[in-house]
Every structure is written in structure tokens, then in C-alpha cells.
Amino acid sequence: MSLLEGTVVQRDPEALRVYLSAPAPTNRFSTGLVAEIDGQVVGVVAGIGLRIELPGLSVSSEEIAKRVGLLDVVAVHPDHRREGLGTLLCHSLLDRFRKTGHRLMVAQLAAGRHELIPVYARWGWTVGLPGAGVGVELGTDPVAIAENPACRTAWTPLVSGVRVASGVVTGAFA
Image (cartoon, rainbow, N blue to C red; front, side):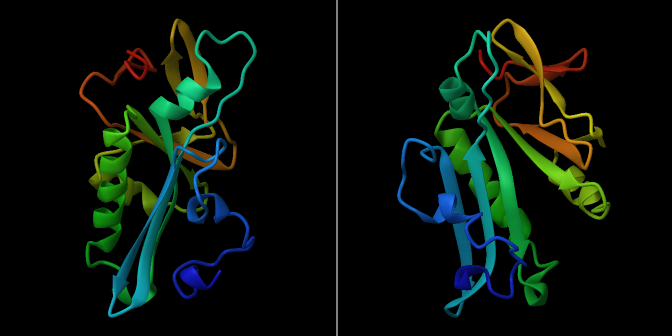
């Protein structure tokens, strides 16, 4: 994908199509932002409403996608790193998700990417233990989301009513 050339190594060119195509029922909660300097793309950020489909949940997958976002991609061209561009892109994306009613944002950090932990911490995110995911109260059901043995889950509330209580994030669906 020429849009990301030099900014991020993309193994599957189709992986980011959801952010670059017209909204459809499956991607209507997705947003991608691009930073340019003198007509050259120097950074991208993309997120999507998190899709969770579990039988018996009291909250629909559509409602979850409206309330919980996944920060999926943050990439800054190597020549423009450490200039605050990633922070600006990330905060701009969070503002967009906040304005559309999202209450919580999560991200998955690959297990070997230890350098990302202080970055997310500086941004005010909580970074969990490897593979643990995060517990979220979905209606009356506490559910662990984003459990992945190869990743750490990071999360940040987008509104003041969302908080961690006894290991479960509450208020995401208040």
C-alpha cells in the first residue's frame, strides 16, 4: 500500500483496507488519520470499533463496537520519530472516537515490543501483563477481552465514568 510506504512494514496489503475504504456495516466504526509534511505521508493512525461476539452476552456486538475501540495502527516515518507526531495522531484519533460515543480504547502490544510500554504509559494508558487482556463489564457480564498470549493489552478510558474496579473496567456501557 503506497500510502504506508516507508512508514510501516505491512505484510498483508489488505489488512488496512477497512480504514481506507468507504464505511460499510462491518467497518462503520473505523477511523484512519494520515499526517503529511510537504505532501509526503509521515504518519498514520487507525482504529476500529471492537467486535466481540459471545453467545449469551447481555450487550450486542454492535453496542460493543460503538463503545469500545481498538487502536490498531500507529506508525511514524523513522525520519520524523520523537517529534510528538505519534502522540498527536493518537490523541486526535482518541478525540474522534470520544466524539462518536466510544468510552474505552484498547490496544495490543506485541510481546517483544517492550519499548512501547513507556510510550503508552506516557500517553496515560494502562498496560497489562502479557496475555492477560483486560476485564470489561459488558452490561451485567464481566468479560475478559483482548486476551492474546503473544500480546500485552493496553487501555485508556475516553470518558470520566470509565474506571478500573477490582480488576474489571466498569462504566464502558453506562
